[in-house]
Length: 331
Image 1 (cartoon, helix red, strand yellow):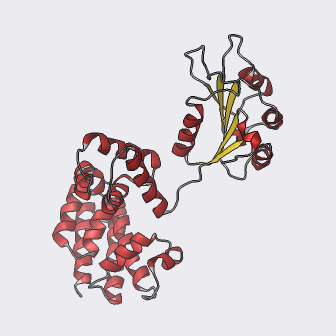
Image 2: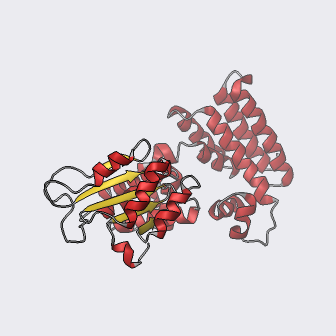
Image 3: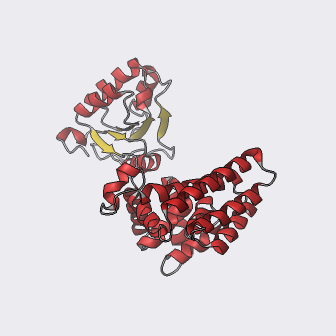
C-alpha cells in the first residue's frame, strides 16, 4: 500500500486479477469511507455507490459521476477495469488523481497486466493509495488463504482438512471462501478431514483423481467403488481416463527424479506442487519402472476405448483399473 502523504487523497487504486480479493479490497475502501472534511460517503442517500466499467465510459460521463452532489455529503464512485479505458478517459483519470474532488471517494481497479500499463504507472506516481491483489497460483498461498478464511470466521482447521477442502472444491477462491463460510456456519467443534469429506463427498470422493489415487496405490476394491460412485454422480468417463493417465504419468515423473532432492526443489522442474510430489513418492511404493510402463499402455488403451473405440466406457475403465493394480503388484 502507498503510504505517501498524497495517499490521503480520496482516490484509491486496486491492482490485480484475483477477483475475490479485488472485490474485498473495494468493499473495504468503501465501508465507512469519509471525505477529507469528515463527511460520510453517501451520507444523505440510501443509493449504492456508482459502480461502472471503464470500457465505453467517456470523459463527460466520468465528470458527471465525480462532480459534487447537489444535496451535500460525500459520494463514492467505483470504476472497474481501467486498463480498458480510452486514451481520452485515461488522460482525464490521471489529471483527476492529481487533484481530486474533496467530497468524492473514487476507487479504480486495474488488472495489473501489460494492457493499460502506462496509465497504471502514471496513476501510481501521483501518490494515490495503491492496493495490490496478485493472483494466487502457488499451492502454499492457496493453503494460507483457506487458513486465513477460517481465522477470519473465528474457526480453526488443520493442514489435512485444509488440503482436503482444496482437493474437494478446487482452486477458485470464491468457491473456497464460500465453502469455508458454509463449514463455519454448519459445523460445531473441530473442522477436520472427516467433516470436509462428509460435506463434499460428491465432489471430493467421486472424482477421477480419487479413482486414480486408489488405483496407483493398489487398492482395487476402493478404486472400483469410487469409479462406480463417480459414474453414478455424473462424472464423464473421459475425465476419469484422463485422471488415470495423469496419475500413472506422475509415477513416472517422480520416480525418475533424483531421490536426494527435496520436493520443493523438484516442484518447478516437474511442474507439480511439493505436496503432490510428496504424495506420489508415497504412492511409488511397490512400483517398478516396467510396471509404470505397462500401466501407461493400459491407460492409453482405455482412453482410446472411452473416446469411441470401445463399446462400453465403464467396462474399459474398470479393466484399466484392474490392469494398473496388477502392474503395481508386478503383474
